[in-house]
Image (tube, rainbow, N blue to C red; front, side, top):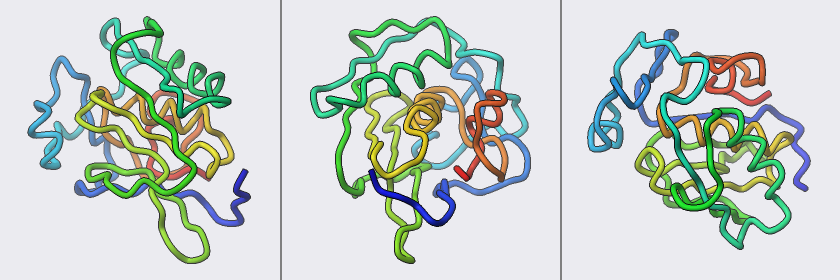
Length: 167
């Protein structure tokens, strides 16, 4: 597992505001608007995901199933099998556009998590972070929400899970 001496930085291509930058799928922008960087500003992150949903852990995530399940289960009413495919890799993700999760390694930012199309595909580099379950929860959260605020991500609340920085 890659040891990090610096903070993990969640960066994203959308505008950064001190308020909440996302909204639940029921009131959020369309997938096309999300990809273009548009969001409903000021909408609070809710206590749980707004609807039943599912995911599939792909074979590339062998050994990471437990933290991925923990991250998915954070959002409640979830079924494993079908839905969002979750892929893992042992290197930086190179094709993420909107709201990538990045980590500072030797002075360079590398992408360690990405949610494509609000739940069409999630890619994780779980070995690069100190809490792969929190990384998974954050990326699953992008099925509905943008980043919530600038600060350290934690398990304290849905807003904290969706914060911009893993410390």
